[in-house]
Image 1 (cartoon, rainbow, N blue to C red):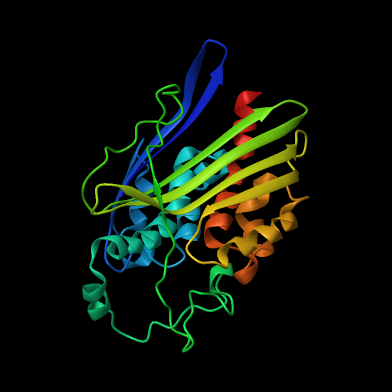
Image 2: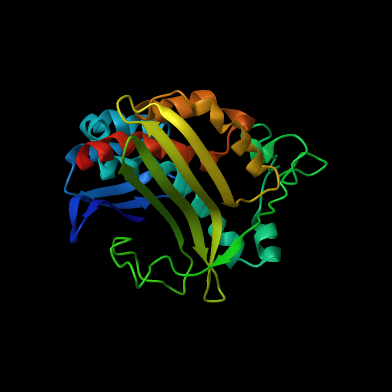
Length: 284
């Protein structure tokens, strides 16, 4: 996995890069970390290499680089995304391995994880009558993210390849007047054998927060692409986050939107708003 994150401020007449981090990680089939390199270098991350880095890796990463979490750095956002994207990468065979071959390779019972999220609530079209995971997944063809009329909108992305590949992108735009305004975008996408790219998960978020306290005043989520019919139902629960300071969102989202109240990908999009206060500080 190759990852990059950047904080960029725009103003009349130009832009300025405030922070830029790169992460290169090799992940084994059991999702343990075989190697981790960051630029700038953080030697403490080497403690995550091996089986000990697999369980509770978000908590372990946070303990190894507490200064990154405290600073709300771009690197911390990348580290926090590692467990999720290594799991989401499991969609690659769905696009690249023929269904008959994929089915023949499946071993075990493959019971659906009922109750783990809104998508796997009772009655979902993801769950068969026998309780097994049906492995259905709704996707959407997409075009390029980059825009010729706004070349600074994204940092340099990996070149498109005609090979099995998964990509997660996240954008958080923040501006301030009498309140904090947030416009955020989240997308997981996969290449296909047909030389295109499909979105696997996609959310847009808009939010407002108090300028002095950082408390969330309002939030609207737009579920663009999600795998199962029941997934968007989680959007109806996000008002539970109103009144909570953004800086607390890493833990508060998990407390307020557990199980079928939340959606794994909506929760990830909301948790990332914990870095907004740092961005506001840079603006001010």
